[in-house]
Image (tube, rainbow, N blue to C red; front, top):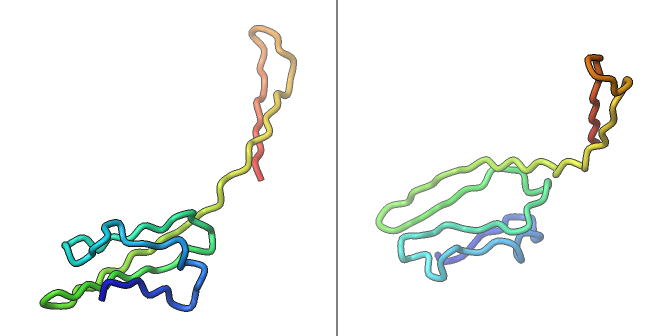
Length: 89
């Protein structure tokens, strides 16, 4: 039908679009811009030409990790053991 059904989440309207201007030219791919953790879910592509083809894709968006904090434990002496630690929220 040349349109995207956004479901109940109107936050997608400004971020989802067909990759090609005319999806009837055999490419009904969509682009989801500015991914957010809340975009995690099952997306369905339904294409009707002579028959109906349905394909579902599960999208999992994970949070971008914070910059890790790293430090060394122990003295920096050649031949001795040192422990390097990193932590990220």
